[in-house]
Length: 235
Ligand SMILES: Cc1ncc(COP(=O)(O)OP(=O)(O)O)c(N)n1
Ligand SMILES: Cc1nc(C(=O)O)sc1CCOP(=O)(O)O
Ligand SMILES: [Mg+2]
Image (cartoon, rainbow, N blue to C red; front, side):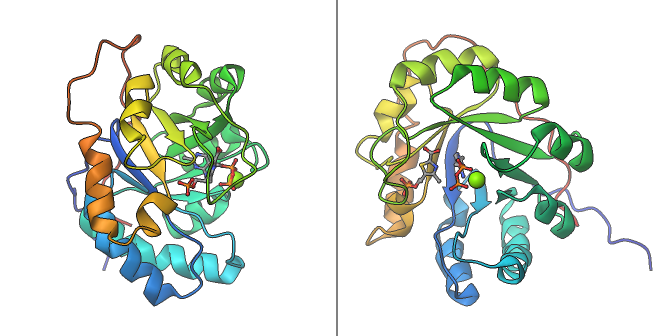
């Protein structure tokens, strides 16, 4: 038998919407259950678990992949593009201490989704775009319960970041109540952990984030070009 036939799963609009990051969860069954409840409302999922050792991270990425594939949601791995490559995930998110984005692009290929943390720096965004990033991420927009020491970004930086032409991701302390202000500032994707996963009703919370995208926006500078065409969701 050869490789399984490619199944072209419809993929949500990668340019706008809710970008969920997993909570730190050691229990894989519980992780799957928590993510499974809200995956249908996400445009992207990032596996991020600061409590996991290498073996658990590998097992959890492998466990999340079928769920993501079944829902047409690309799965990115935080910090470790080699793990993404090894498990056949759709991409990786790299911060300033997470290695070379150009090397990740060279290995993962043109269709991988590669995100770059830019914090509050437009210069980082320019460098990331030049190195092959699929999106640029800025934060923290507000005090973050998950990462209280995260440096902060001003809304004007999000707006200006649109000059990269890449989708602009906002992260850090984004709640259903402040989500609309972040979208109005220029974010294409809202990256969220606690606002969904620590909510009493995560499904309702995720729906509230999506409503932040519904009302028409005042004109924003610079059109966003789509992320690299996404490959079929087959392993
Ligand atoms: C979408 C998104 N934006 C920013 C980050 C933060 O990345 P980094 O600075 O490497 O911090 P850690 O997530 O590794 O703690 C992210 N993960 N995702
Ligand atoms: C992982 C991460 N990176 C940030 C940055 O600013 O780069 S803020 C953050 C935590 C996001 O979690 P929450 O939605 O719970 O605030
Ligand atoms: Mg990191």
